[in-house]
Every structure is written in C-alpha cells, then in structure tokens.
Image (cartoon, rainbow, N blue to C red; front, side, top):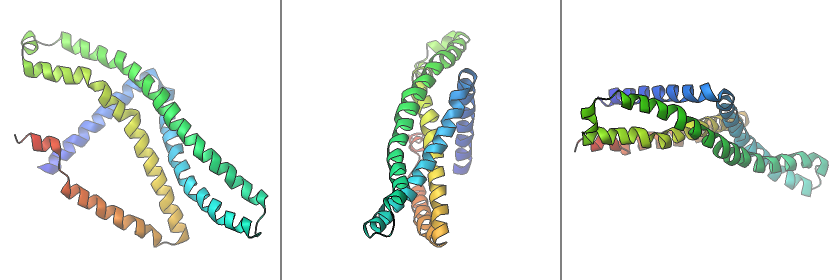
Length: 208
C-alpha cells in the first residue's frame, strides 16, 4: 500500500514538473536551459573547490619548504579566489535574484490565467462549500510558493549536489578505490535509518 502511494506521489511530482517546465519554457526557454547549465557548473565548482583546497594546503607547505616556486603556486591561488566568488554570484544573484523572480512573474500570468478559466467552469454549488473553497484557496494562492520550491530551488540543489558528489567520489576513487566506500557506507546507512525512522506527515494526518 505504501509503495503504491509513493509511486502515485512520484507520478504527481513528475506531472507537476512537466507542467511547470512547460509553462516556463514556453515563455523563457533560454532561462530554463541556463538553470540546468548553471546548476551543473555549481556542482562542478564544488568539486573543484575540494581539489584546489588540497593544492592550496599541500603546495603551500611545499612553497614554504622551497620545493616549488610561487609561479607554480599562483594558479591555485587565482582558482581559489574565483571559486570563492563565482558560485555565490551565480547562486544568489542569478538563480535567486533573476530566475526566481522571472519564474514567479511568468507563473502569475500564465498559471493564474489557467486557474481563472477553471474557476469559470465550476458549478455554483462548489463555491458555497467551505471544503471546496479551501481547496481553491490552496491551489490559487499557495501554488506560487510551491512552484518556487520546485523550480529553481529543488532543481538547482539536486543537480548541484549530484554533480559535486559524483565528482568527489571519482576523485576519491582515483586516489584509493576503497576510499569511495568510506563515504558510501555511512551515507547509505544514514539514508536507510532516516527512511525507517521518519514518517510521512500527510499520510499520518489522514488517519485522524
């Protein structure tokens, strides 16, 4: 029963993303594509930060010992500075300063116009029902906040973390193959523990 409910929830999420991205892509296709590119770039920069930080520390010691020159050390210093500035600009200025505002503006016109068309087709008795009005209120007034979480927030976070974790696993595996398992085993154990201990609050509320 729970597996069926989870499958239905997954289908609803996919359908919501298909509708949401369809609306946004019809009005701002370049912006939608750029979000996926920027999210991947943010994850790549997270991974590069690990590599650069290692060189900053190790090569800094080698520089102090006279084993390398400052010219050999300088590229990592420049990369360290860029990786400290660029992700913040992309994340806060572009994604949450421009994309989120533009997405909400598009949804306020395109999505709400759809809702108004549906409201015109509703039977009058639904407007007299408190339960129906509550559903209408949630769909009409809370949709914007839900859409803001779905895009760009969840999309950017998912792609960024997936790219960064994949890069770090490959990097760890290139050093020692068994280092990958020192990361995966605790992560999988924590995931299994959380999935068993946590419960779906919405499913729990339906019992009352």
